[in-house]
Structure formats: structure tokens, C-alpha cells
Amino acid sequence: MSALKLSYFAWVRERIGRPGEILTPPSEVTNIGELIAWLSGRGEEYAYAFENANVIRAAIDRQHVKHDAPIADAREIAFFPPMTGG
Amino acid sequence: MSPLIKVAIQREDFDVAREIERLTQGRGDVGAVVTFTGLCRDEAGTLEALELEHYPGMAEDEIERVAKQAAARWPLLGATAIHRFGKVLPGENIVLVIATSPHRRAAFEAAEFIMDYLKTRAPFWKKEHCRDGSVGDWVEAKDADDSAAERWEQA
Image (cartoon, rainbow over all chains, first blue to last red; front, side, top):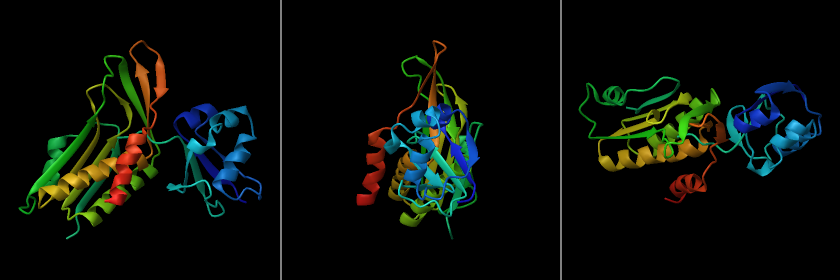
């Protein structure tokens, strides 16, 4: 898997402590859910951000996706809480 | 002729009258203009400001998708959606939706459709700043907003 641009928003960003980063997940990480699990193992800030993984929303290349979405062709993946605009 | 669609994500305030004029000036086919303006509440005097965070790029794309869906579903002549980001004080504008059509029903329904989907799909998040000086919580999403959007799928 090649390098991925990850972006974090709202309390996901605050808990992880940065707005984004470039990471290269191992090849066994194939979808959003697996990426969340892999990130959660990287440190307690990630574990805290993703502690309630089912509420986390994700976007691949700026389009909403579910947690079973494959990430093979993704360039940018964003994680954020449910939206509260309007 | 395809409807005039305008989507803007901006820090500065918007002028409702000027945005209506953009959709009505120089034409005689608009019979109905529906506008919705969302404002920042003071939460019974406890709120100092809302901080609106967004995902640049995706916010524009999502709102444009919703506006185009509305234009495909109703006979609209125009649709405008403007959403602010940054710090917004109580009484100030947050969001504007305008739908224009030859007849009122399409304009009413399309404006509501755009707002309902904007709330559940556009990547914006609100953080509360309280009057006692503390930085409050992130506003939590409401199930009622999801239900409001879902009812358009049954309709």
C-alpha cells in the first residue's frame, strides 16, 4: 500500500493532536474499519479518538464512505464525528 | 435552461437580499422564492460564540451534490446555499438556502430538502464557546436530523 494522506476533524483532530499526517499502512489493512483498528494500535491518542469506532464517519477522496469501503485506490482519507452544520 | 446553482463556503456574512436579487433580477419566470436562514442562538445567554470547523473541498462538493439532487427532483429555476465557517456570534447568520421556482410548492420543498441533507452530509462541526470563558463541548449530532433527511427517501 502506498502513502496515504490522513485528515482529522473536530474532536477526532483534537484527540489525535494533529490535523492530519501521511502514513503508509501495512498491506493487510484493506478497508476503513481495518484502518481504524490499525490506527488505534499506534498510541493512546489514537485509541482515545477511535474508542467508539462505530460513531466515526469516514470519507475517501472527499466522499462519504462506510467502514467496509476498500481503501486500495484512496489518496486521501478523512475521519470525523457526525456532522453538525446548518 | 438549467437552474442557477450557487454554493459558497465563506468566513464573511452574506446579504440575503442581494442573494435573492441574483436569482430574480432581469427575468420574469420566477414565481416563488423561498429562503431559509440559520442563525446562531445564545442558548439562554450562556453561549459566547460558535466555532464552525469544516472540511475544505468536501464541504463545497457535498452541498453542491445536494443542490443538484434538489434541482433534479423539483422544477427549480435557482438554488443557492451559503455556509459560514469560523467564529459566529449569537444573532449572526450561519447558513442560507434559497430555492426559486415558477410555483411555491417546489421552492418550499426544495429549500427544506437542501437544508435537511446539508445538516447530515455537509462536513461541518460546531464547537461552543461559553460566556463564562470556558471552551465548551462539540455540539452533538441529533437523531432528529437524520430522520428529517431520511423522510425524503420514503417520499
